[in-house]
Length: 431
Image (cartoon, rainbow, N blue to C red; front, side, top):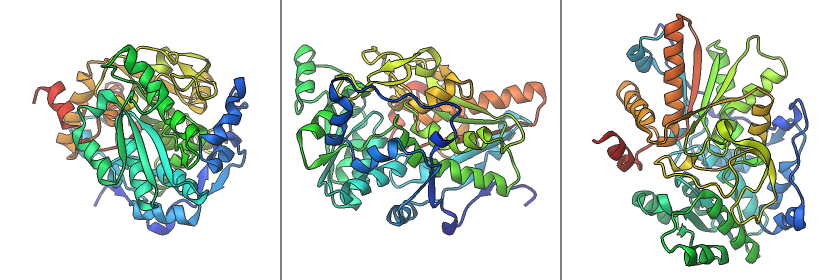
């Protein structure tokens, strides 16, 4: 072949360490606020080893061999593809690449931290895990990890998505999960909201509050977190570490790296290893790191950089990040995984320092879903609605390169597949 169209890594090149960007940040990450003992309360909510990892300063954190084995069972390492079909369709001089995180057993990148957190929970003696989910990918990943390790799981799922994503709900239940529409009648906070509005559509912040309350009240239960916190993004760096190695193999250095962003796990996992290289001056050109968001929840685009609660009930400590505020009323969109009020503290600090930029797309999602249609027709598979935001941004950057006549190298992360989101595509694209 005259050009490389796929870069795969052998199993023995699976990363042995997660990358922790705290060691390379230009300034110290703002610490959570310990108001009313909320930080002490975390030990009764989160997985103990993960709490420890949140504040580690080491650049490299060893991945337990058992977790590496679970990664291999889940199909890691994953390939990097060149989007030759999309390049041809767009007639762009840019070289386009995308990482295939859709190839996991549950169809998204979320398994990378679910396997780690549930492994640590099982080792600590917990018999049950509980979590929140927005679009459903994180809940499915936790149900999958709990099933492999013999733990029970409960998923509080934002009602907006719970009601229309019937197939994904069945998928979670096949793994043995208890799946509840949030707000639910199982928690005090959920009952309070349902009393005010029996048809409450829910938000991710509410589902987080319910999961935290559940874990707080049950000693046998731990709460694996799906996004935002540093250790979650750190676990996800297996994505970016693979990408760095894959790009080195084909002697490419990106001009732009793109990922969708709700809370930050997908974007952070994909970009942080390369951002770290840039901070250490190990790359010889300026790389742009672009987060693609929805105008329904443009926390990086329109949010304020300040302390705020990551959950609606204010159970968890306030953290500093770009936020729309924890009680922000977000409109409904099909890409539920992007509908969150606050961005990760790590990504927020990088944005505040000018190292990360963000773009948002209209909440009618037509432009985004049209990009997905172009992608499936050019590349052959269907991305998740959330991933389609990154694809939209990649197409926009490719068209800018075409207009300028520049041979840019643009790399995007396809965080999940859309096989369980066909109703969304049908409604928006009128199929």
